[in-house]
Image 1: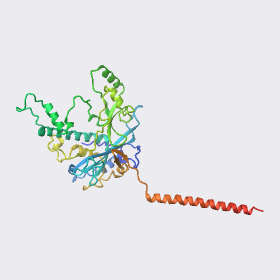
Image 2: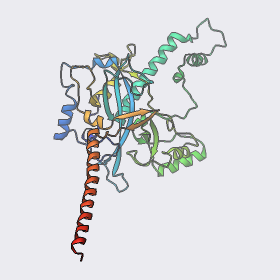
Image 3: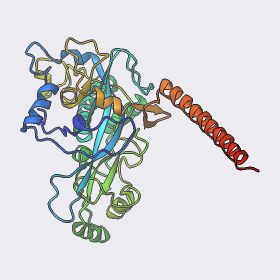
Image 4: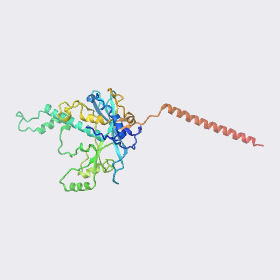
Length: 383
């Protein structure tokens, strides 16, 4: 279920309190070092007595993202990007009953902090979110809308209009399918993938598509400069490192799509809402038949993430990624995410201050002695 090629670079990156791109390299999970890291990271999974049932009482709270540079081991051609961008997401598992969507931290007790490759997080999170929304829409339609075309409805009754009005009145706009909206498969571009412009019979659009075939573009998520949003961008390379233009690919996308705006180029893909990990009991998907009550997406995200569970009340807390996570501690203020820098020691600062004062005094004393010796020398050489 979980891809083991999890970009283990974040476990090996230097712990640095300042937000700087860090040169690193992916570790093959079949290597001795990779096996050792995986062994430590999966310690809980190897314990037969351990299960993930406790996660159903928690919710995922997205806290922010950041990026770092790493060597692209797959670069072979001259035009390939040699230094690719690795994007990481930091999130928190909060008890569902105390998780706050309005609080940037989500919760302040009984939580675990985690960091994960953005591609893995996006794919699992969006799938879990999509399943939850589909279930909610279906459940609301069947139990609150009364839009069945039965004998009690008149000839003017329209089921689509009924469901539309029901969703709008219930504040469930996400259940409404917009047939006129630009069709972009968000799940496809949850990780960097070659961009395929929508087909159109218009001659100008066909010409633009022909031009796009000559210049291949890639679409994928990236971390906004302020770190609090995950946006969609258009790139010129298959690692989604080099933007197609100075506007994160928005201008190029518009030219390729007949003036359409690129989805999620201005609004974040992952919001601040708490996503519960409790599986919808009435869902008839594959994971609903398993032994636990945890969403498959939550299991994927949890298993793949670097963990710091210092404040989590579980039997076997995993602390393997605490040092790294502490180095990228995220502070959110008014929607802006910044990476905290280490605070200077007050004691060290006091000693440095005293040393500076002593150095000034010593310099003054040396000048005084030199002046006194010079005057003595003049007196000795006098008549």
